[in-house]
Length: 255
Image 1 (cartoon, rainbow, N blue to C red):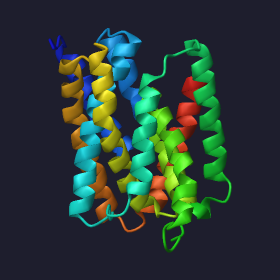
Image 2: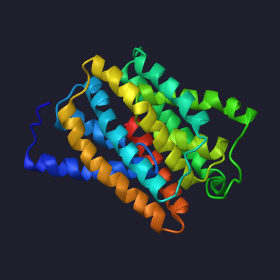
Image 3: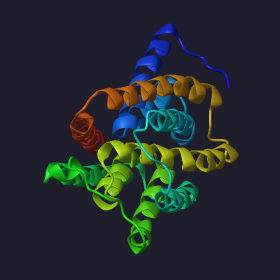
Image 4: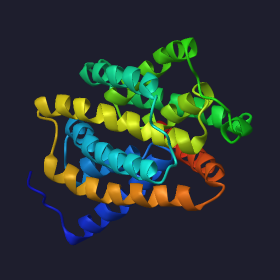
């Protein structure tokens, strides 16, 4: 629980935390900022950094979700068909024993990010036009395995899961980007507690560093929702941010 940070480290925490909160709320892959800080600045082992990172992710998602609900940006009623399979998948993912080496994992995630970059760039209008009614009835059950798989990935390693959730919600679930961001936050907040509990039971959570980062990430999430509420063409800017974060993530995982 002890937090041993210099003044410069606190400044780094503040900048990284706020930036991560903004990126995770509007796009995804913000954990690519916080994980290296937990590992290289705080000196946490990678598994502990992965567990500690879940605190800020869960708290910022709750803040962003509640703010989006308060401002009427996203309607959360009836979103169980996304949340339930994702939460179950996340519980499974967080229990999976890592059977591949770190380099192979990085290349795998990097490859997925390259694929997502192609999806973002090919026919980008799909991400920006209103899709009408979201899925209903049997179509929801057919989409459930997709969100279960995304949940497994999110439970296993948080980095990049927001990007995959947005892709599923917009391209399969037929949500607008702004509405999809709200549902994405609900999903991450919902599976945040059980996955955090699993990491905690394995003694892989540093509460001091995690809570400190969570404060700054929450500020970033609040600022991001204000941006969505006040900028008329927010979806277009979110799409651009998605392209930048996905491209940057792909490069980082291959370096």
